[in-house]
Image 1: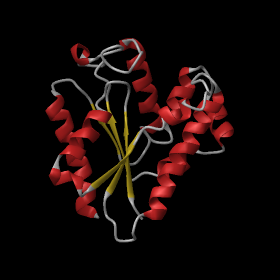
Image 2: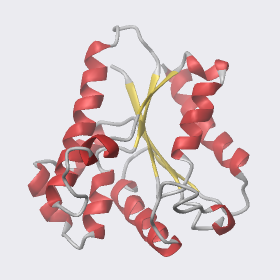
Image 3: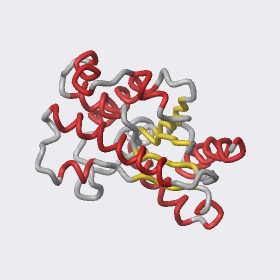
Image 4: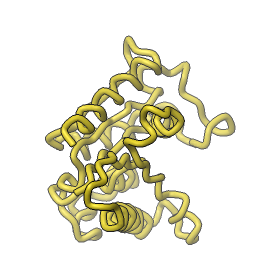
Length: 196
């Protein structure tokens, strides 16, 4: 069974940067696979992010990508699967629209425990808007429209969603630069390689 690890966190936390660094490093390339964020695919369907259906589709798309990859990998494949956001990230965006958590589970036909069981670990890369504001970039410098306060609020909702996972690790920004933060995330991922 492949080991899936979620990379979560508010906008500008470093999820994409970390994945790109790992993909570019020959020492990591043979040890990881990275699933992209599903937002662009769902967005191309013409369903707006403020519709409930959008988040339901996000959950279903993430599950489908993860489940398909798990099925097609060879039984002895021990690469770590890094997920650019996990299925429960949708709860944070759902709550951001003012809808209730109970409605989310009912509408998506899921439970919190089902989401948690999908992943061996959750690495929460805190948005730069929280503790490293000088490094938080928005549109047009970066593809994110959120004001810093919106990014922090979303980050807190993601902590609410994932914080109960047995192997949840939050990596903040205070007293760290990007290399420190990335090194901490890589150390967590490395422990799963050693276990595998």
